[in-house]
Image (cartoon, rainbow, N blue to C red; front, side, top):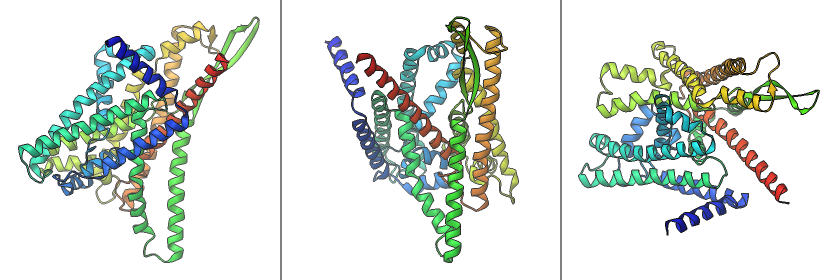
Length: 438
């Protein structure tokens, strides 16, 4: 019986993968609509003004952005995919502490699938823990309209189930092989916050202005926004081509090619890690009830992006320096666990390929490590400086933290480009399979 159920499950997954792209696109759109609908309506026994105050004033705007406003609304999907992001960070850190996890992560597709399942299990656990913590900790401070055992249990169960459903939906999107489910939901969340930012910009720079000024401001806003997206695209699409000489194909003739190392080697992970770490003390301070204490409030302001680069209070810009340091440290960290120069050097050796001027073996490993580290740090520096520049512009004009600027735009563009590459790779595999069968 168990074998029959497993066979049916595998058949279901196979049929999902073989769906036409139009059907997959329709399913993805339906999932996004469902998630956004469930994220927009607050629970009747929740005080949304309390959570709006926390997310808006106390520097947790990034958390509101990645949840697509669902945490501010305290809806069914209040936690959104934040437990999965937290679980990913924990698992990446645990991979350094426990060698078995690191080996699993580097053990090809099978190992990565197991690592992903463990991450999902940790995310489910965190969903339950975070839901209970919010209902008990923040509920007593004003989050729940009526702080009763029934309200606490109801909120804990609803928020836990909502987060688990989103994890399940992301797994379903993964099965379709139409991209990463978590990335798709993350992009949808970020995009859902854009309209409110557009209205804010309109009210500040267009409404009530004379026509000439309104038109000029509109053009400048669009130009800055497109320039930021263009820079993000360049950063995510730039590669350093390492020349490779291959002597296997033609005797007595060298075949020259290259293998690329992306400028944005670590993708958006250092940015997400750093932003999450900066938000952690703020969350802890609120749960511990010390956010209003003088020392704690000063630390919170340093960690709040909306307080950076203000000329009348330069001390709080220390948080920007901390943000830069964290992204740099996570770049080193992510390179260590996500980029394997030994494997690349071994693959080159197996294919009888060499890097001109570099001996095979250890010298090749060291060369690849040095080059990848240099290019990754360059990409991280450029990315972080762009984010800080956008924060500086927003804070100079009193805009606070916009979802169409800063960290969120980097995440959005990087994720879209990764999804595009993944879909192109899958399409190429399907074409090759069809040609082979034909």
